[in-house]
Length: 110
Length: 114
Image (tube, rainbow over all chains, first blue to last red):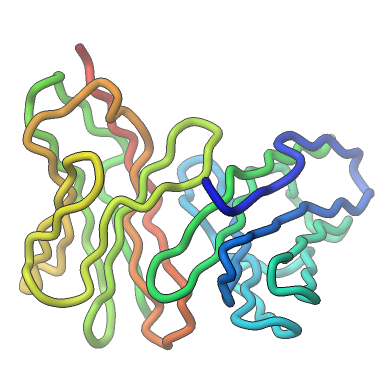
C-alpha cells in the first residue's frame, strides 16, 4: 500500500448525500484509477486519469464524478444518483505496466 | 473485447502442498498479464507479470505463473503453500488499447489449511 493513501478507511453516509473519497499518491505517477469492489465481482473500473486535468469514464461511471487538478490527487465523489453505492473503493496509480493500490475505503450508505 | 476468467471461486490446499490458481484470458494481440493478491480489507499487492519472454514468470513470495499461449492460460503456482498465503487472488490483463487500464477476473479465494 506504500505511496498511496486513501481516507477515510470507513465511511458512513445517509442515502441521498454526496460523499467524496480521497486518494493521494507520492509516487509521481501520471496515471490514476478508481475501482469498485463487490463480493464475487472482482474490480470494476469507475474512472481513470492518464494525466493532470484529464480523465475518462470507465465501465461503471454512472453516479460518480472525479477531478484531477493535481498530479498527486484524484478524489472520487459518489453522488446521490449512484443507485447502489455501498462497496469497497480502491484507488490505484501507475507508471508503466504495474498498478499500485491504496488500502481502500469501505463506504456504507443506509 | 479483452476478458479474464478465473474458473474457481475457491481453492483449498493443505500447507506444504503445491497450489495452482487458474486464469484464462481472451485478448486481441499480445497479452500483458498480471497476478495480484488481496488480504482482508486491504488494497491489492502486485505479485508478478508476463509481458514477453520466458513462459515461466517468477514473482514475489515464492509464487510463479506459467503463460500458455495455446491454452490462453496464465495459472498461478507455488510449490509449497503456506497458511499465510490464504488470501484473495486476482488475475488481470491489460487493456489492449494502450490506456494502462487493467481488466480483472472475479477473484479466487485461496484457503491453505495447516
